[in-house]
Image (cartoon, rainbow, N blue to C red):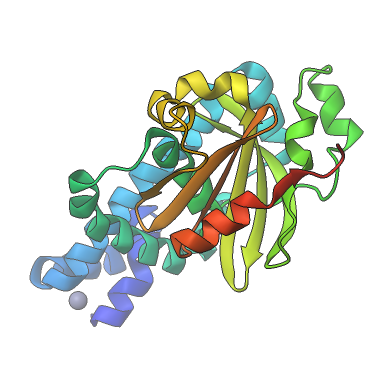
Amino acid sequence: MKCAEVRKFVRLYLDSELDAKHSFEVEQHLESCVECAGLFEAEKKFDVRLGRFLRRGHATRALWENIEVQIAPVRRGKLRALWPIALAASVVIAAGAVFLTKSRGLDLANAVEECHSAYVHQLTAPEFKGPVPDKIAQQFGGQLDTAAFAYLPSQTTFSSSGARLCHVEGVPVALILGHCGETPVSMIVFKKSEIDRFPETKRKLESGDPIACSHSGRYQFAARFVDDHVVCVVGDRPRPALEDLLRTVRRADG
Ligand SMILES: [Zn+2]
């Protein structure tokens, strides 16, 4: 079996959906080809990471679990169709692992990275445009911070594709998904009262820095207080561009 063929079968092999003959051939190839074995390991690690990410999504309050199930079914089939992208991502993750241990980003930057990463790799998508639909708001019995979804940059370089509910370290957040040019950029908004969960970021913002910057993996990150909310922007964009974007964020309905 040639490298290209083995790589085509990696996903099926990991899902135990490959027949015995092909499985044997893949195994044989992996024993002799360092490059494919490396890719295979990276893909396996990505599965673990993804599993952790998805489980975390279901580990929060029953309410969130309920909402997640209803509005965010991440279909296995979709994941499988996307495996070449996932594989590319896992290579980046593996390559970045050494780098990350040397230079860790700010706590909040690290926490939101997975939200953004899931968006970039099309594992998550907007659920609605404009204000939170009543149907969703009602499920929270008035507890949902609908104001968080009203924040938008006035800068025209950002185009929003819509928003969805998300949670970061158990904090419910508004996740606004968009692009700057071709680059996916996420905006994450949550109540200022939740900043205690991210002490490093809190310290930085309360020490007088109007904007807290950091990076997590390949993504740049910038956060600031806007009214009674914390607004973060994340993306593979130059830091000054993200800061400029963040400065223009206003509450659209206020
Ligand atoms: Zn090979």
